[in-house]
Each structure stands twice: as C-alpha cells, then as structure tokens.
Amino acid sequence: MFLLEVNSFFSAIDAIDRQLFFAVNRGFSNNIFDTVLPYLREATFWVPLYLFILVFMPLNFGKRGWLWVLVILSTAALTDIVSSHILKPLIQRPRPCWNEEIGDQVRLLASYCGRNFSFTSSHATNHFGVAAFIVFTLKNYLGKGLHFFWLWAAAICLAQVYVGVHYPIDVVGGALLGTAIGRFMATLFNKKIGLIKQ
Image (cartoon, rainbow, N blue to C red):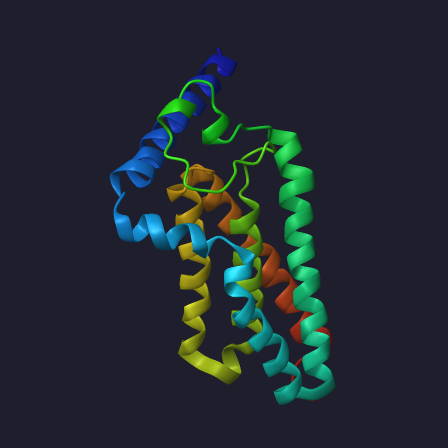
C-alpha cells in the first residue's frame, strides 16, 4: 500500500513536470527566444564573463584572489561530479528529448541532446554553485550588483528547459544542489582564507 502511494505521488509530480516543461518548451516559443536562449547555455558564450572574473579577482585581491579562483574552480568541479557522476547515474531519468512517450513532441533547439541522464541538470548545478560561491564570498565588497549572478544562473536554467534538454524539476533540483554546494564552499573559503587578511 505504501509503495503504491509513493508511486502515485511520483507519477503526479512527473505529470506536473511534463506540463510545465511543455509550457516553457512550446508555450513560450517565439523567434527571439529561439535565437537567444540556445546561446545562453553554451559555455563559449560566457567566456568574456569568465575571463573578467579570473582577471578581476587577482587584480583586486592579490594572492587571496588567486586562491579564490582556485576554490571557485574546485566548486565548479565538485558540482559537476555530484550532478553528472553521482546523481544522474543513480536516478537515471531520461531527458525529455529521449523520452519515448513525449520525445516526438519536444522542440529540440539544442545542437544535440546528450545521451546521459536528466536529473539533476549539470548546467543548473554548476552555474548556481558558481553563483552562490561568488555571492557569498563577495557580498561584503560588491553589494547588490551580485544579484546579476542569480539571474545569470536562472537564465541558463530557463534555456535548458526551453531548448528541450531538461525538465523544470531537473533545473530546480540542480539549482538547489548547486546553491548548497556553492554556499558550503564559500563558507569554507571565508573561514579558512578570506579575501582580506584579518
């Protein structure tokens, strides 16, 4: 009886997730999003931002800035390991573009649909992990301008659903996981190293 109730619960969640997926993937469709959103999820599109951060931190914080760069790279690696190498193989949820029941209804705007699994979205986990690390290590120095990084990560998550490679729950789960990892790494950095010598 308990297993039946659990299965019913997850079936209901999956049905809602599919409805939300199609609301974004098909319902939001327009020429502007079709042109812009596929680029937002590409790492090469954000290279100027990454380079700016990697130059900005050492220039402004010296050796501690270099340590900050090392830890943010470690944060990105950790989020990817947890999402891609632990959770995805464990949960094994097919991507919407490979789902046998709905795959032919998906508007696939990505250049490819990965054969790996869907939950959690590694894009969401990685970018929210990086965003959280940036926000929680720099909030005393850059203030409200750091909200850009939350919007940046959220835009990438939206793009993942819009182009047809992830469900909403995949990106929400990734965002929560990434934020938790980023916050944890930021707390460690702030306690053990810090950007300003105490």
